[in-house]
Amino acid sequence: MFMKTFSRLLKASLFGVSFLLCSWALRAQELAAPAGEHSTLRAIGAPTESASYAVSITQNKSEDRVKIADDIHVAAGEKIEGKLVAVMGDIVIDGIVLGDVTAVLGNIKLGPKAVVEGKVNVLAGELQRDPGAIVLGKITKENFGSKLHSPESLQSWWTHALSHGALLGVGRGLGWLLKLSFAALGFYALLALVFPSGLRRTGEVLVERPAVVVLSAFLTLLALPFLFLLLCVTIIGIPVALLVLPSMIIFAVLFGQAAIQGLIGRRVLRERGSLFVAVLVGSLIFGVLYHVPVIGLLAAMMMGALGLGCSVAALLSVKNKVETPAASVAPGASSFVTSESVAAEAMAGAPTSVSEVSWVPPLIGSISPASALPRAGYWLRMAAMFIDLILVAMICGPTGAGAFILPALAVYGAVMWKIKGTTIGGIVCGLRVVRLDDRPLDWPTVVARSLGCFLSLVIFTLGFLRVAFAADRQSWHDKIAGTVVVREPKGVSLV
Image 1 (spheres, one colour):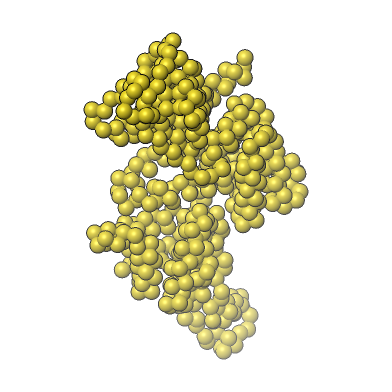
Image 2: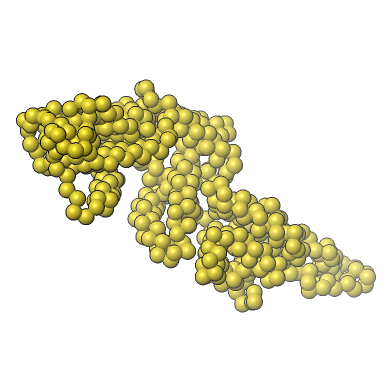
């Protein structure tokens, strides 16, 4: 009884997404039908051969039928005057349907006595039609060609896992789910190798401040729809809303999950072994847990929310100012120290020679190099980049060069870095790009940094996200060019 109740609750939780699919299908049919079109039954001897049929009606129903994760059956002798819509379910017809028939992620089976006056739409499914079946409307089939989206695979997932409250299951047609699980395991292990310190810090946030993690997850999920709409309203932010934002959210969830699994693995191993092994152990533990009915699906939902919360909380908790390596001693610094020590000895009465105190170090020896300035954090750099993106889009949009926004942004950045050492967005946010060896930026450096930005962007924006977790605050393109972004002290003009 409990499993049946839980299955119904789980189906209801999918109603929101499925309702959108159903509404889209019904609306598309209404728009596609010509004005004034009405379907009627044709008698024997009508001009169109496909419209000739004679049946015996035993039941007449006028309502529409909509089923989610369930099948629809129209028996022989039954007449349906409304529409049939099934999502993640099959439609089996051996009677008469006057309206349209639509299956989303399911199959439509027309028996020898089936008559469909309206359209037949199959989205991500198959149409099995008996030679004696009659279809008067248009037949539309949309197959995505992916085994992952095939109705058999999804229905098998529902039958062997989701309907029991588990995320993973064992059964026929679930090979794709096993491959996906191993791919996720490999990605978690890769994160442990590339971002070991970031994973440790993100996992510890859950232990030190669990309330902040939960609140961060809740507020992020609450703000995502508004952020998406805001980006779409600006027009130029549509690519960010459709590509960058989803990629960042997916990566944040996966990164947080890897951090939590690493935390569990470290506790199980009692801090013995590497983080790579700990992540593998934690992933296997959760993999087994995801197979448990009821608990598995709840654990997966909780891990998704906590993973997102851990990543967001870790990003927000990172201080903008980090410790930087000690600057190399400038020429004459040792003489300056020696002179101070000699002066101290002189005050103490020790004999000193005039040559030991005759040299006074220049003032420039006490000035820190530019690379020793506080390094800019992730959010500040993203704000500057967003300002630059808006400016470049305002130029490319009216000229019809919207498809070249990213290349134009790369050229704009390289030129500005060479001329001013920063961009307009960097000027607004008080940022400057400097070389680690404190030499002036040259063309090879700015070009290498500009091209490296594409590498930082293309793989789930990992190159940019490194700034949030790495102690040196360098992105991938900073590493390539040997540069770093610093925050200029207040009062220093960048213009």
